[in-house]
Image 1 (cartoon, rainbow, N blue to C red):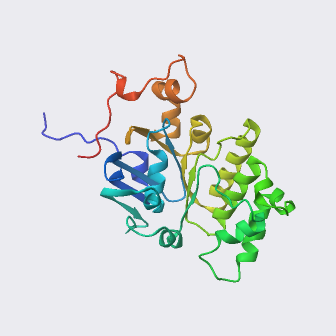
Image 2: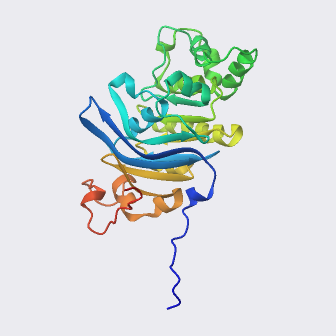
Image 3: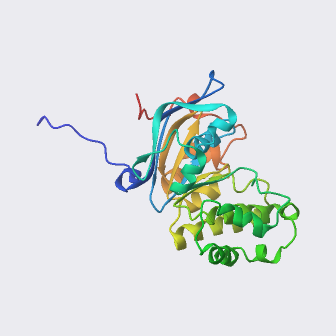
Length: 278
C-alpha cells in the first residue's frame, strides 16, 4: 500500500455554486415537537431541485424554515443555519426574506379569493415601488394568457388557473429563488403537465432557481436536475434526477414501481443511509 487515502467523488450538487444552503437544521413546533432532525441540502444557482417524500416527512416545514414562515405556526429553528447567496437568513422576518429574492408558492395556492387576478398580481409586487410593475404584469400574462382574460374575482378561477395565478404572483416579486409546495395538488393530469411545462420554462427562460416540493415524483424528476428524498425529518437519499429515477428503491416507493404496499427507507435492510451530519 502506498499510504494514500481514497476520497469519495464529489456529488454533482457540490460541483456548482450554491444559491441556497441548508446546514444541519432542526425545527421544533410548540417547544416540544421535533420535525426536522438535522436536515441539510443545497440548491445550485439556476437549477431546479426536487424535494421528495411522503406526507409528514417534513417537506413543507423545510420550505417554511427557508421562507421564515415557521413563526406563524409556533415553530422555530433550534439548530443549524440557512444561507442564501452566502448570507445567513434564518431568523429574518418573511418580508425581509422576500426582499432578498426568495418567494414561496404555498400549498393550496393561497390566492386572495375576493380580489381579481390583476389585484393578486399587484399584491405580489408589494416589496417593489419601481415603474416596471406594469411591464412585469404583462410578462406574467405572456406566460399565463388565460389570466388576462379573467376579470372577475380570483375565487372563481379553476384550480389550474389559481395555481397559475399563484406562480404569477411569485414572479411579480422578481425572485431569484422560488419555493414551490405541491404545485400539482388537486389538478387533472393534463393541467399537471401544463403547470410543470411552465415551471421548466421559468427556469430555462428567466433563469429562476426553484426548490420544488412535490408528491408526484415522476413529474418532479422530469424537470429537476437534482433531488433529495426525505423520511421523518431527514434527508435519506440524494442524487441527480437520472440517478434517482433509476434507483430501484425510489422506483418502488415513489415512482409506482412493483408492489402495492409502500415501504419506508428506514425499514430497508439493504439501504445504507448517508450520514452527512453529526
